Amino acid sequence: MCTVSFYKNGNGDAVLTSNRDEKVHRPTVAPTIYNVGGTESIYPKDEVAEGTWISVDENQTIYCLLNGGFKKHISTGNYKKSRGLIILDLIKIGSFEFFYQNYYFEGLEPFTLIVFEEEKLVELKWDGENKYLKRLATNQHYIWSSATLYSEQEATLKSSWFDELFGKQTPTQREVFERHNSSEKQKGFLLEKDDLTRTVSVSQIVVSNQKSTFYYLDLLNENELTIKLEKKTITI
Image (cartoon, rainbow, N blue to C red):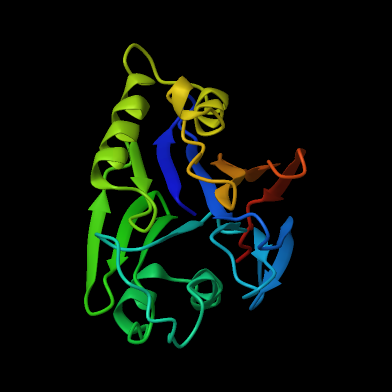
């Protein structure tokens, strides 16, 4: 949950790609389809807190969370719940606007939340005291870096590398995935700071007209997984 990008590919599909930078000994369950408060959702699970950092549901809403807000903070270690549970709460609520207006943020560690819902893209930052909402145009490309792991200079450099992909034509989702799965020497986003904390997986969600596809690469075990979820149909 530390480097995230969003754009729409040449077919107009929404594509969100996320690198999970984490302690290599922290266990993770590969993504599968869960029922969350009556809503089918695909997500990988953090075994420690039983939450997640990325998900797409049957309504084709994408959720992705990064640690930290605007800048690196000192963790007090005394928070009311894991940030990984925020996405599950949001899926149960079913509406970002209601979540934003009514969710109790006090006592949560700073985070950045990206939500794509009904063709709308928003960025929500919580700095531990205040929340900040930014509505983003979906016809542009974006990249976010976790404030807890990357300096402003590192984030700016990654942003320039990401911009290069859009120089002549819109990249394919695979080209974006490969950039996320490349080393810094190749202008990629894999974390290479130390052996204990590094990029442990790459996830990519593609939302098209009638289905959502979740691509998952487990870098520690060298396993790949693809899961599809049909769009929920509403009968009247």
